Structures are given as structure tokens and as C-alpha cells.
Image (tube, rainbow, N blue to C red):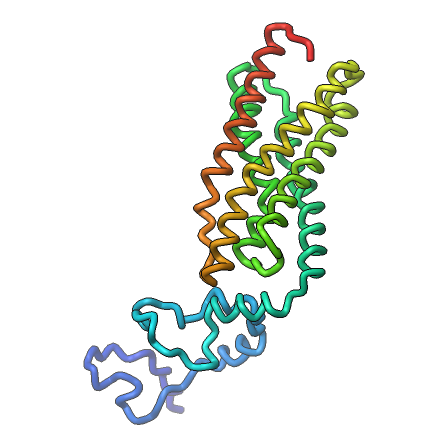
Length: 260
């Protein structure tokens, strides 16, 4: 009985004539690819805008090149959504985003509540790390909307409103945590301080950070070009610095016995 024929492995012939499309027998796909293809879900229309090729400068270097009517560009995508979104929808979107942004940043407040043994690390967390996390997360949701779904806002004032409300809501939740969990039996002066100065600080810093977002949004919707979120960074940095200076000063004053 003759042995079964050995399975022929892939050829090691380096010649170009061995390429599949030159051998005459055509290309045969791996059967497993058909199973994978069935599991792959098509992208949503709003997600396709991030992967379109019509704005590649190497393919379409000149702005006067006329694109086909079916081409999905950022300008066409944004214009279509701006036309379809009503002013009432934008107002509701703004309110929901503003209310959700504050609780979204509570992680920063929890980090700030950690007590550390050494003063250096306490100041580092409270004056640097904490403010950076809090101010970034308070406008994180609005930043995502400006970058991915700018048509949800109707004006720069909507973004400023989101910043102010998110800061206020964040401050309120943080005060509840501090005055009922982190600090047992707070004094009346401390309660008054937190519900006035701290609320004003959080609201003002979030408002300042949102100014940069509003300018980015206005530029994007006016020119119909992709938002350049990096242009909002200076305003966020200013908010972090102001917040950090306040926190650092409060820690140092408390270390020297100043009673808030």
C-alpha cells in the first residue's frame, strides 16, 4: 500500500512568475475569511467620516478638484447634520451634556480626597494632579461632542453654558462628599466656604476651559473643517493653573493652622 501523498507546502520559488495572479489559476481566498466577513458589522454613517479617503492630500491635492456626488467629506457630513438638527434639539442636547458632565468628573474629586502621609505628595496630588484631572474631566464630554458631533451644539454660548453648569454640578457633588464623608463634623465656616468660594472656583475654571472649546467649535462650523481641539488647550491649562494655585494655597494655609 503506497503512502498517502505528502501535503504540498507553500512554494519557496522567489521568481515573479510564481505570483498567484500570474500562474493562471486565480486567487483563492482563505475559507475562514468568509466566516469573519459575516461577523463584521458595517460602520455607522457617522463613523465613516473618520475613515474617508476623499480628504487625503496625496489623492486630492487641489481644493478645486470636483469630487463625485457620492463622496463623503467632512464638509458635506457636517452641513447635512447642521441642516437636520433643529434649534430645540440643540437646546436639549446642551442641557443633557451639561448635567452629565459634572458627575462624569467625580473621579477627580475622589482622587483629591486621598490622604497622604508626606506633605510633598499631598501638595502634588492636591495642587497638580487633582486639578488637572478635574478640569479635564469636567469638559471631557463637551470636548468629545465638539470633536465628534459638533452639530449637537447650536452656538458657542451652549458650550459656555455646559462648562459653567458642569463646574457647578461637580462642585455640589464634591461638597456633599467632603462635608458628609471626608470631613466629619465640619464647622459652619467650612460649610460656608465650600458652598461659596469652592463653587465659584469650579464654575469659573470650567467656564474658562470651555471658552477654548467654544472658539474651536465656532471655527469648525464656520469653515466646515475638522475641529482642531489643540487650540483649546491654552484655556484648559489656565483653568488648571488657577485651580492648582488655589488648592496649593489652601493646603499650605491649613498646614500653618489657618481655619477655613
